Each structure stands twice: as C-alpha cells, then as structure tokens.
Picture 1 (cartoon, helix red, strand yellow):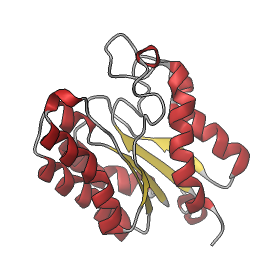
Picture 2 (picture 1 turned 90 degrees about the vertical axis):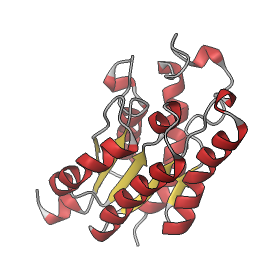
Picture 3 (picture 1 turned 45 degrees about the vertical axis):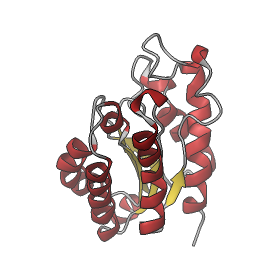
Length: 190
C-alpha cells in the first residue's frame, strides 16, 4: 500500500452492528457509508474490520495487527455494545477503548467514537455509566463522537430484526447518516 493510499483510508472497527449482522453486507451501514464516501470524498477508501460478537477486550487484542495491516488515517471505533449486553465493567470497557484510541493516535489516525445505549433492564446506574463512557472518552482524547448509533429509531421495534438487538436493512441508512455527520468534518482538506 502506498503512503498516499494509507493516508486516505478509513477503518471501521466494530461489532455485529457494523458487520451487517443478519443482512447483506452490501446493505449494511458501512457499505452505504463507503458508497457515499466514494461519491463525495473519492480520495478515501473504507475498510470494514468489524466482527460479530466482538467485545472491547477482543477488539483491543486484535487491534495492533489490524492497525499495522491497514494503516488508517481515520478510525471509526464502534465497540462496547457487547460489553454492555454482557454486563461487563464499564471501567474495563473504557480502558480497552482508550488503549485502542491511543494506539490509533500514535499511528497518526483521527478517531470517531460511536456511542451506544443499553435497554433499561440493566439498571439505571449501569446504563447511565455505560452511555456516558463514550462521551467521556471523546472528551478525554479530543475525538469526534457519534453519541448514539441508533438515534432516531431505537424505540421503533419495526426497525429491528426479530432478536430485538440488530437493526434491519431499513435502519442502515439512518446509521450511516449518524456516522457521516461525525466523520465528514475529518475528511475535509486541512
């Protein structure tokens, strides 16, 4: 890969929400975002290194290899949902995501953190801490932030697959738009 190409790559690094779980890859939000970037910012390419079921710890473990292989200029970090669904400690999730961010920043990448919320059945203290973690990380590291990937449709059960967790194909353009709004300013010429 040439240096010029490396300077123009966007790496989406997430879980099943970014891996188009249950729908065709070409209809997932990452593919839709890649299509828009090809039209509006053709100097950039998008790679999706998302893995269904990934936790922040799993993402951290495989990140050095992904970073070395892809050398992104922008990292879209969409991890943490599986930590929350498993009730894992929020402090550990923040530490894992922070370590990923620090590695990406040392490699010269700019970062977009993609936030998530949990259903209320995890209890108010945990759900508040979980939701706040993404904004706290964005503030700490000075990154761009998508406050909530499912903003605008999270309460609409028709926008989710039968599992009630994974968005349908109809929701994917809304997710792509959420990420685009935070990502687009990072793609403007400096």
